[in-house]
Length: 116
Length: 112
Image (cartoon, rainbow over all chains, first blue to last red; front, side, top):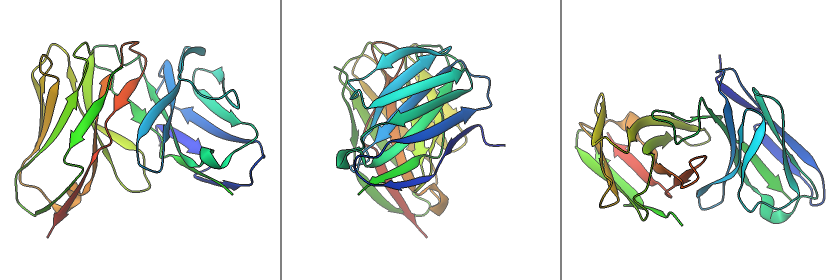
């Protein structure tokens, strides 16, 4: 059983479209994240949610809007897609935030977004 | 702002060699440091987590050390195998505590 699952795995779309990426974790964790990995493989935090509340929004354009209907889900909606949005987006979860004493992060397998 | 640097960017070794991957960070006020493995087309797998009060952690053939005061960590892989081929990423908790700051990774290739 996959601990952190995200769909779709691949997403190809045209500029200007609106798309969503879904993420679900079955680990019972309280904290979920979205990370972006660019073409240079650099992984950077986008959002962090703890118990459905937004904790971190790291200078991400307003076109990106995370939604957490419950603790097990953190979906990412992207409006008016741009070429520069092409990247791999990873969802992750942990029981507590990384400041916790022993909180490993569990990652989904990623969604490769290609904007044409 | 926390910056994480990993050296080398790429490494190729023959099977059986012991090797060391390096990670440095600019702000020593961290909560913990994690080493991850990323296989092509897949997500990241956490290998080892070292709390800020700890000096090292071991798991099988892997040993990670942490020198918080100097802002350095090393990942030691003993008796490398072709299956160890992957990208290894180092990450430290940010000041806010709610996110990890990642290095760009070391791409490791272990040849038979």
